[in-house]
Length: 94
Image (cartoon, rainbow, N blue to C red; front, side, top):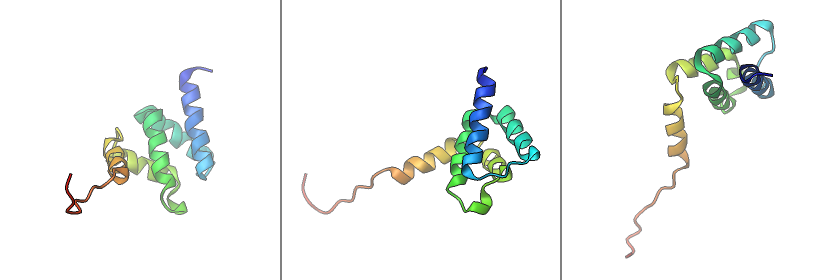
């Protein structure tokens, strides 16, 4: 299996695991998104989608995520910000 096929299969398997619809049109949409944005970006968008309500788990939502943030930098920055610890000065000395 070549790398492109392997990457596409990884994306389609992730979508299936996430509960995406499994029609031929859905497979075609997933394939097009991988061709346009690359497997890594699509996998990242699927991970974002999984964190949303179940009715958002479809390729249209993934496409919207990718159109807003094609390289994933904005969403990755938001994720990093969400896990970054916050330090509060409690008035104590060093």
